[in-house]
Image 1 (tube, rainbow, N blue to C red):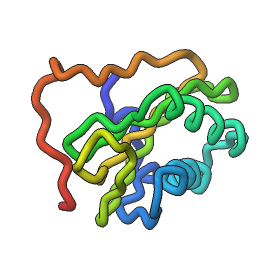
Image 2 (tube, helix red, strand yellow; image 1 turned 180 degrees about the vertical axis):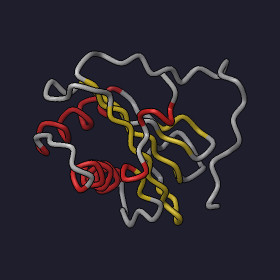
Image 3 (spheres, one colour; image 1 turned 45 degrees about the vertical axis):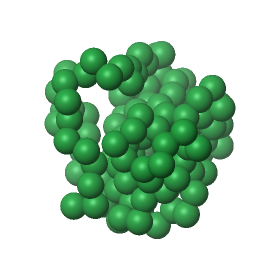
Image 4 (cartoon, one colour; image 1 turned 60 degrees about the horizontal axis):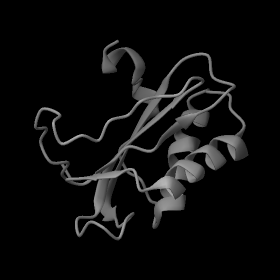
Length: 126
């Protein structure tokens, strides 16, 4: 499956206004709801918060990949958000997070943050 098959233009928020991690997660959820995805807001927020409680999904270079399992979804949902000002979502990185890719699916996702990925360009304020 290619990213362009699951990341729809209406799932992109290029001008996030969030001031902290929780607001950023809520803004990403709101983006998919406004695009027509029907999910229980409190359930999906709880899923994201529980995942973040295990460890930050910030992977460095200005990127974060919040993700989780949501029973109500039939297909994978991917949203993208960009915070021009950047957000400090973890204490372990000095670089503010600018780009957020959120993944949700009804089955457990394996999202690797391995540094063995091919080198990608650092997320910038574009």
